[in-house]
Each structure stands twice: as structure tokens, then as C-alpha cells.
Figure 1 (tube, one colour):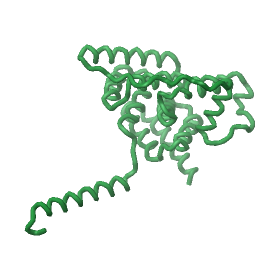
Figure 2 (cartoon, rainbow, N blue to C red; figure 1 turned 90 degrees about the vertical axis):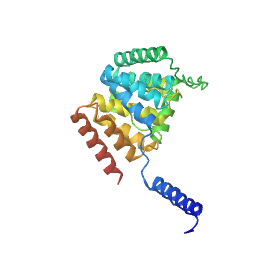
Figure 3 (cartoon, rainbow, N blue to C red; figure 1 turned 90 degrees about the horizontal axis):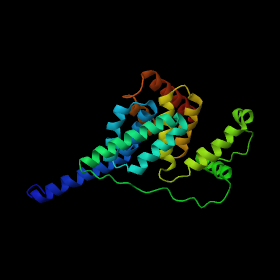
Figure 4 (cartoon, rainbow, N blue to C red; figure 1 turned 60 degrees about the vertical axis):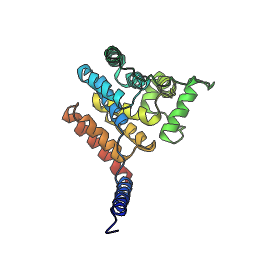
Length: 241
């Protein structure tokens, strides 16, 4: 091989490929570019930071998110931060898409939600979806808020977990990334944040990805909210040891 340049090059290529494969195997899997875009778009929409949202929307489209996926992110998050933020986000998205069309850029629309054929009552469907999310049966005593105001528990099951989570434009992991990002952004909802961070873990999002999610939000949120999120996540992960 000393006197054969071809064999020497082939051997070097073999070593490089082996190193790449080993590195990929031992390095923790982080958030994808699309997932980071979902996190940022969710936070900026919930915050009402429309100027920075425009740039984030462009980055999301260029990372491979479809128009319908981004629309679904904004539809989903209204359940956590309200219609006004969601509607302003959607209008900002319309503006971004119109500007891109003027430049000759045609963005991919993506799939629509599959029609629901499940004929069970929405409450039962929502309860079943929530059980899928937390991976356990929910037949125990109702939460204190459900006892105090039963209708809110009905709305949660029928609307949030049936009407919204049932739509397959986004999967459960993506919806939980949206939810956690919004909860961190609005702040002061630590019990709910812990609960949804735990659902992320149950649904296969890794500890490293959750840590990265909080890091992604650093650039757009107050440090107090980031530190609060880190504390919730640290306590949750310690409870898993």
C-alpha cells in the first residue's frame, strides 16, 4: 500500500467512514432543524414577537416544514396561549407567504388532516388519546379542577385531546414540542410544564432534546423563564433516576 496511491486513498476513506459511523452512534441525537423551527415559531407566536416570527417562519419553511405543518402549529398553540396570539401568528404567516410568492418562491403545502372516521363520542376519543400520550389508563379519581368545574374537563377531553390532538398533520412528538415551548414562553405554569415535559419523554423525545429545546429558546425569552424551565426539567429528570 506504501507505493499504491489508490489503495492509500481507499484506506483513508475507509477510516473516515468508520469514524463518522462511530461518532454518530455515540453522540446524542439532538433536535432536527424542523423541530428547532417548531420550537422557535411556537415561542415567538405565543410571545407575540411578530417581527422575529417572520424570520423564524422563513427559516422553518427552508428547514422543510410545510405550510400546513406551520399552520397546524399555530392552530395547536391557541389552546395554550389563546386565540389572539394564534390569529396574529397566522396573519404574519400569510404576509410571509405572500412576500415569498412575489419573489417566485412556491412553498410546499403538505398534507391535510385525515378525516376522522372514529364514531365514538368525542369525550371517549379524547380520553383514549390522552391515555396514549401518558401511556396509562386514566380511570382513577378526577383532578381537583375537574371536580370543581366539570365542564373544563369535558372541554379538555373533547376539544383539546379530540378535536386538536386527533388531527394528524402533526404527530404527538411535534405537538408536545409546541406545547412545552408555549408553556415555557407564557411562564408561571410549572405543574403543567412538568407534566408535558414528562409526556415528551414518554413519547420518545430524549432528555438531551429537552435540554436543547430550552437552549433554543434562550435567544428569544427572558432569562427568568429559561431558568424556571431548567429547574422544572432538572427536577423531572432527577425523579427518573
